[in-house]
Length: 381
Image 1 (cartoon, rainbow, N blue to C red):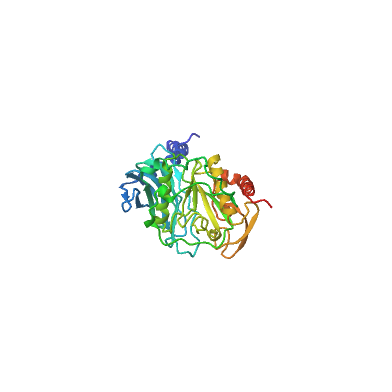
Image 2: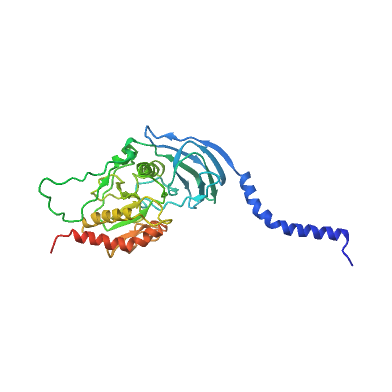
């Protein structure tokens, strides 16, 4: 018996619903996201007469479209034990970039930092105006977006490298340890010492060199580097409340080494780079994201020379392991004694991808060649 007209109508409705259901699933999130857009203007302001300009603006779950004055760096901060997923894109036709949680930081219980404040890595975008921000996740308060324009200084176009001269007097005595590589100073990148929160803390001994990447991006020019470091300095001190920039030294993709934290490059200054292990180490960060590409040979060479200088001048070796007590990290409890390589990657001590898989894979060779450099400068006998 053929179905009645009413039955045929019900069957047609069911078939239509089945055929259109996948389409509705695909379209609905986009439509919902468009309805959730918040559109507002953000203007960056100068930081106390500095060339650096910045802004911090509240965020809420969903999609926020910001019309901004020029910025080059972006991060997010919040309070709470949860970790929100914050992504940004610099234009509607650009891909979304997730801001990874910041794993660098001062040791727990130190005087550095704003209690309860967490943040992401500081992403380098290059000069931009406007961006979209997408927030997913709950359980946090005071969620804010941080925009920084590091500005420019006359010296940014190229700090003068050391001149190579031919000695006219008798040659100096051979060094007793691996020599210090050339370092560009805090003045070279335009540090404003009035931003520091406190004074340097000095270590009794050196056991390790922790290797990092800044996860900021790779498409920067020579002239961008001083501003990149100024922006990190502003984020670490003004936003996160650290004493100073967290890293003791930074190395750019052109093979230049820069003094980071103040207190004297020859001295052992406690940094804020490796949670739980700052108390017996030096932190060196390669500027870039080495999860997404191979490290630059010039940067690796300068990293080796920095490590050789610091370790050799404190009678340490670059190969082998050391025993050190944790003060509390993602991986090790406070008071736990652990064995770690003398030159290790940040991921060896904390739950992070730092220093990026490509640089981490190079660490065994970096240890061997650093030790070879130290041995070459050791006095005979």
